[in-house]
Length: 157
Figure 1: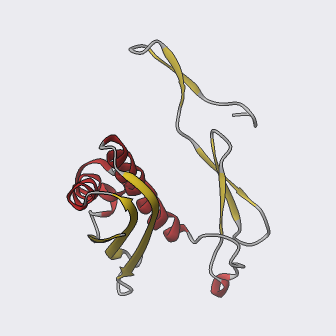
Figure 2: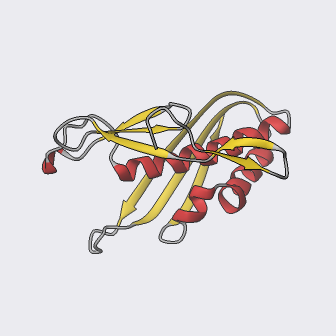
Figure 3: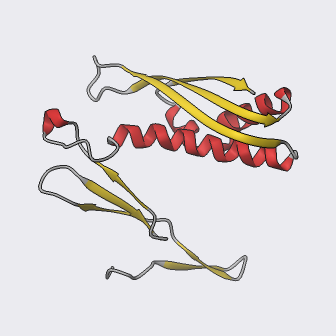
């Protein structure tokens, strides 16, 4: 496909055109620095570990997966809380993970997500929103749970 062109499909049920999901990667330097871009032009950088010749100019590929888990679950949690008219004044997520270095590749085996929320948010609603996200809605969570145990905690106000 030529640069600048977007792949479009027609959704017969909704009588609308929609852009098919697509991500492209471009090598930025002569080593491992890559720039990923989606169909709307948003981008981020990835790079390898200096031990293999990278230059710490972006996320490692595995870190993008972990960040995607945080982003996916956060969008679910925020959307659920907004629908319940909860007031979120500040929102952060911290994620820690472990890999089994004895495996090749070294798979992620444990993930812990800590949701940090400030605002006028009912604790039971926050807990339910997190559980709905991780157990039902978040695609990334459902993919990662095949190899990793995912746990969570939260801090409210």
